[in-house]
Image (cartoon, rainbow over all chains, first blue to last red; front, side, top):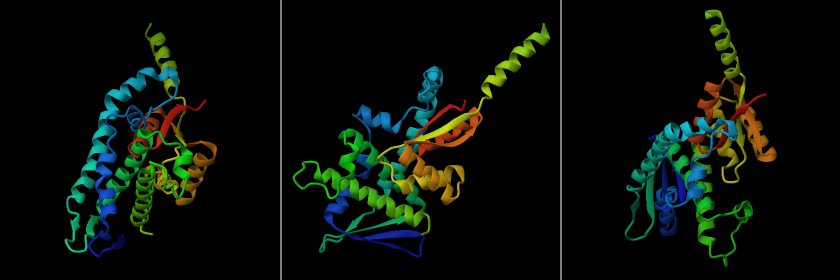
Amino acid sequence: MEITRTEEQAILLTQIDPVVAELLRRVPGSADPSGSDAAKRRIFSKPTDDIEEEEFTNDWQEYVEPELAKLFQSAVEVVGGDLKKLRVDAISGEGTLTIANDHLEAWIHSLNQARLVLTERHKLLEEDLERTPPLAADPRSFLFTQLRFYADLQGVFLHVLEGR
Amino acid sequence: MTETVVEKETKSSSAIDVPWNVVVHNDPVNLTTYVTHVFQKVFGFTRVKAQKHMLEVHHLGRSIVWTGNREHAEAYVEQLHGYLLLATLEKSV
């Protein structure tokens, strides 16, 4: 896959092979913490560890977390909308995707959320994340590839966003 | 009677006004470059200051990124949660 800046305030992803296209399409679903209490706890973490602040924590869950959920959902929807425009060449099988610069924050957020959710959902440890390259014999090797790809893409998008 | 009531309110107000820390905790998933970016964005830190706090989080497990009144501390924690950082508020004293 190649990533280039365009003159229209966007970045262009070209030569997207079918595996990478599938990894991209999986971003919104991977960012969804449904069905995993651990993932939900990580995405909506406590605002304080102070046991005397129980009322504040309860208020936070009631009033702040729904707003955060909307914020997260809107970022994932931006990514989902962009992915609908992923074009695949019928002959080469390679895809092309244009992402507007003002969508980069949403992509960075969603890639981050996907990595957090996947890590919690699959109960990965810090040493699992640091093992590169992942062991081919490990049944989770596709998951590690997915996590590594999302981290790399997040890093590239951050680089572009910061104008470096 | 009125003076007594005022005195009680003053004490209560003083208790609320203790400084609060905004603390960011280490997380093995969040990228160091991402954490630095968020600190710059939320607090307006220079890149150097943001990196200093990021390294504190990374090596020491936590960093106090801001100290001040409760209301602002809550708002900062909310913003940091919006970026999916592990952030909490705690009394400074």
